[in-house]
Length: 339
Image (cartoon, rainbow, N blue to C red; front, top):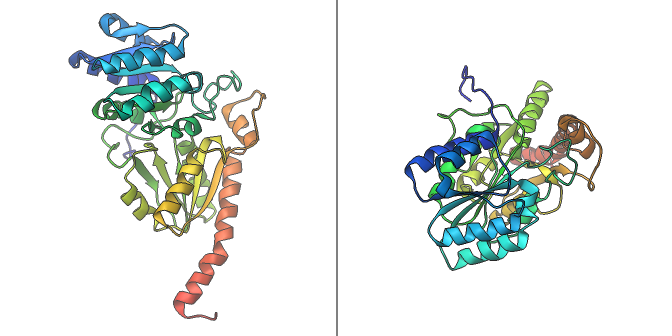
């Protein structure tokens, strides 16, 4: 964010819906479908565009079927529901009617899932969502967008309108601090560098970008300089520029509010580094163990499952220390020291 600029935080869904409401004023091909999930801004869309708004009720599977049909008729469709329900409750419909169908027909369906990670902190694991990256990454042709604040969420509406194909836009349900302003957020690269470090870079998405920035500040005060990258376009980032940036580091730590080692951001990074042939060591930080039923603040729950600020600071510091012998040996060979 630009120094001295103050942006009042708001819910991601409100910022996105405001952008869509404005776009619907001039684009008659935008259609909005919801699964009995509302907001004040959604009331404005329904009031101003009743012929392009549909509430299918608590029926997410039918939500996908109707959205696919509307897309086949030429509409740009936005489908809106709680994150775990719009991904896992109707996975087969997404697979067949969106991912598979998009192989043979041009369709533009944008799934808006609200409540990623521990957003619905008091609702427990039925409404919390730790698996959506894993589930949606398993589908060919599915674009995944994962903003870290409301500015990014609103800006990504433009990407949804401009690019064809099925997409999953995952939004936090809580009001998070703004990391950007309208003039500083750019979509093209699919990621944003927040800080540059010396040995290790933290690659985070969504809520965990906020954690990464706090961790970088804490470790920086202790003499450990780490970089921070917000990866908001999980499937469409600029791989060449991303590769160049990570070439300055010896290691990468991925941060996600999802199960670790289950095919989310960590698996994406392992695969990407292997395919690019990059000499990077990787450490993954994500939700450890299984489902938990404790109540508490988001910060407290994060510490319990290994993704809180203290837990991440410890994991990153240990990872940096583990790289030191490798870096020292590399310097010795480079400088002509003892072998």
